[in-house]
Amino acid sequence: MIGKALKRIAKDWFLAGMILAVVLATLFPQVGATGGTIRADILSNWGICAIFFLHGLGLSTERMWAGMSRWQLHIAVQIMTFIIFPLFWLAIKVLLGSMLPPALLLGLFYLCAVPSTIASSVALTAVAKGNVPAAVCNATLSNILGVFLTPLLTSLVIQSGGQGGIPVGHAILEIAKLLLLPFLVGQAARPLFGRWFDRHRKVFAPFDKCVILLLVFGAFCDSVKSGLGTNYGIETIILAFFGAAVLLGLALLTTTYGSTWLGFDIEDRIVAVMCGSKKSLAGGIPMAKLLFAGNPVLGMIVLPLMFYHQLQLFVCSLIAERYARRKNYC
Image 1 (cartoon, rainbow, N blue to C red):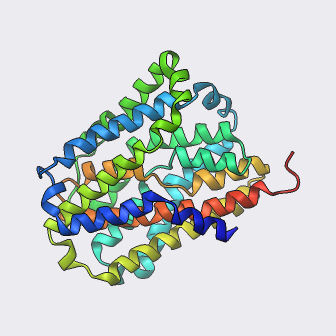
Image 2: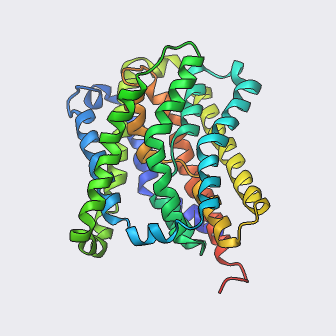
């Protein structure tokens, strides 16, 4: 099982692309910086709008409504995503906050504040033979709530840290225009183009990853120009990786044992694990660019989320395969 997962990672061009994006940003920061040669900031905004339009176009409304009846499950997952995750961060801050750079500490909180993924949550729930309609509903609800809750939570932490506030109302409006509006337009267009999109879904599959790579490149170009490489060493990058790994471990333990304690059946426990432990890179990076616009350490702020994204895919793929082999599934 582990061997299969390692082979999957070896073939994952997206992981290699993320590493290449960071390397290129370090070597040629003027190319992708805000206002730079390729105007990555403008291109990435249009790309993100297209991603969420395609998410809306590809999401079956019928399947989403079919999962609505599991309201206890939905409440539990959203509490995990937007309340328990920040509490994990609070514990890290109390125990280790004095030893972590402020930018990394903020990045770990931002990781805890972003919503769940849509595509990988639903896909891994299907692999694990869980309640797919409930996963569709949960992941969609998380992303809608994230438009409002992520900037609100981030603002509260920034203010409590004495770093000055961010215009929450303006941030929510901009995030809604960038993420929520295209998603709703995609949903509205589904009756006309949904079947065509479903037939050609594989053609569009690499698009969101390409846009994310552009976002990563642009974010790190801005940070390198502002002195990220000189202000933070390899030890900070290692801390970011281990911080993401610790948060993922806590999330998986909490969702696994918490969903059992709440009495969910196995299909709903799978949803709790796959949706409650996920964090969205596709939604998180564009929101970070709006929330931390002009911040010279934007690259460090999104670094834990980048690590978490790869870790969650690797670990949850192993867990999904283990769930899929359970004997009581029929």
